[in-house]
Image (tube, rainbow, N blue to C red; front, side, top):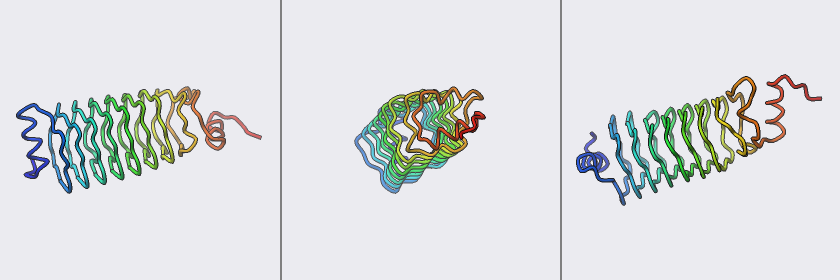
Amino acid sequence: MTNNLLGISIDRALVSEEPIENISFTDEILENADTVNLSFHNVEFERCRFFGCIFEKSSFRKVLFRNCDFSNCDFSDSYIRDVTFKNSKGVGTKFVKSRLINIKAEDSNFSYANLGSTKIEKSSFSSTLFTSASISEASLKSLTLTDCIFDSTDFFKTPLKGIDLSACSLENILVSENFREVEGAKMNLYQAAAIASRLGVIIV
């Protein structure tokens, strides 16, 4: 574990089995940390970088990530609630089978992230990239999406009914052959025409 405030705090938490709470971390670097079943509560991360870290089955509540990079880290099977991501990078990050509630993401990058089988509720995402991400077999409820990029995103077996995608980019999204996933989704005219074209509909 890296010998800095964050690394020391994690080491102590793993030994005591108590949460890391009511603390801020700035300009920290954490490498190859295996922190399964760890709990973070009321924590702020500012300009922190995480390399090869595993946060499986962990809990994040009332946490802020600002200008952070946790690309390719693993947050699978985790409980993530009341968490804000601002100008942060999670390229290739895994959130498989995690539950995300009341999430706010702004100006962030989750391209190539794996959110397969996640449950995402009551959350808002703005100016955030999900290019080539996997959001397959997921449950999405009460989402607000503004200026997000979902180009080449995999939505296979993820119902988008009731989700307003009209202010987002949806180039070449991956869905099943019958496009059942997009039934009931809200799209703008250009998006609807693109989907219709893929279904073989000729618009005149």
